[in-house]
Amino acid sequence: MSLNSLFAPRKEAALLLVLVPAFLIAAACGDRLPASSGGDGPAVGSGLEGARVAVHAPDAVPPPSPVLADAPDPRVAMLERAASLELETPYEPVPGEALHHHTAGFANILCSAVFLTGLDPDDAAENVGGFSSPFQHRDAVVDIVVDRELREVRLTLPDGVVRSARHYGSQGCVAHAIGEDTVHFDSSVVEPNLPAAATTPWPMGDLVSEEPWPTDIDLAMVEEALEAGFGSSEAMTLALVVTHRGRILGERYADGIGVHTPLESWSMNKSMTGMLMGVLIQEGVYDLWQPAPIPEWQADEGDSRQEIRIGDIMRMSSGIRIRAPQDPDYDPSIGYPDHVYFYTATADSFRWAATRPQQWHPNTVGRYRNSDPILTNYLVRLGVEGRGDDYHAFPQRHLFDRIGVRDAYLQTDVHGNFLLQGYGFLAARDWARLGNLYLQDGIWNGERILPEGWAEYATTLAPAWVADGRRVYGGAFLWVNGNGGWPLPETAYGFRGAGGQSTTVIPSHELVVVRLGKYRGAGAGGRALDQAFEMLVEAVPPVGP
Picture (cartoon, rainbow, N blue to C red):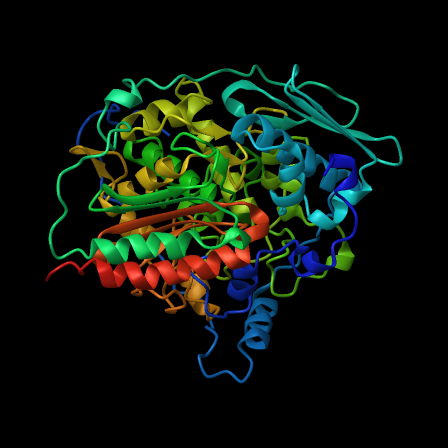
């Protein structure tokens, strides 16, 4: 099938042509969440130094008027509670035309899938990246050019507008503004400072230990779990990796996908954003519970946004006013949502987030909105550049090099701002490394990378979400199994991304499970992964008392 012919209507795909991932709709409505779905501090490499972070701010006030568990309609009660706490601030619609935004997202996705992951263009256009580029809007494109020499994709719309995206070094694919064919920053290639992967033992390299597993692990059932978790062709799974106590217990890959293939990961990058902030806190740049020093919030002495703390932002509880498809009262008729505009604006996404007003006071109402990870990434840039470091090299030098990650593309807007609310491509093994850093309480090879107490903060239910009756979100942009919606112990937590991307940490069994796949396979892939979870916790004995 050619790119220009694949856009014929597909009746069988109708249920997949949605903007909002199903697991986020469930969370927005309070339903059970499916598992698949500033100063100098201690120098890097200073071992276990660094202050312990508090799970709650010392002066934290419990959110008022929680939704009662026995409310006749929890969603109505949640919306009434939000309305009673709402501040009188205006909403400013995003500029531009929706189709132009959708197509900017398509250009980025197609560029990334072809030039980073190595997928066939027809396959990519048909099956990947349905969040910032919903499938039902792709048939508006009248001409597609995949320029392998420039490593660029150009998409033409009926009105003559061309949306393009090009591969820029380690910053991956970046969509250009309308009428422009370049970006407004100096791109770079950030080489890992690591030994050769092929001759280095896991987890710092590729070599997997052949040491026998303990006899109490049912290896036959582990193999069955991998088979079940990978699923049928309908699941479109590309990679499945399971580790136990940091060792690779098993893994499966689709044809053409390997241990170093960067794959679409979507909002799992929010959890990485939380880790980058954790690194800066460990290094003494920020304190978790300090007011967030966003420059745009400091101009007026009475600006209520000065109340917003870094810890509130990373609990998706800042209260910043934007619109997101995951909002329980979302009305698509109002226009294109800010939540997706951060991906497709082809402008300064940090500034758009920093200039939005408050809808609620911080730590009162929880909403899944990209403004919060965008603001955290803004703080990361301010902190890194404020001490004179290379912003684009910071994740590799201060996190990835320390745990063996070699294959990350962290994508930006046209101004070089990381869009790690979702635009990051990593290999499955790299996500397993990040999950194991949490399982090991932020310590890697005896060195503390994340602050003491960070994992507890990240896995503790966010008070504003609890007050809304939704026991599913923690800190540092982590999802938690607080309502038992996953077929796992309630202590499980993880990173979640649209299209069925997930990294799940199961402390009770010392397991980390990573599943990545094509966006269109999310439903079948999620059901397959849930089967694997049930089998894995049976095959691997729980941690003793």
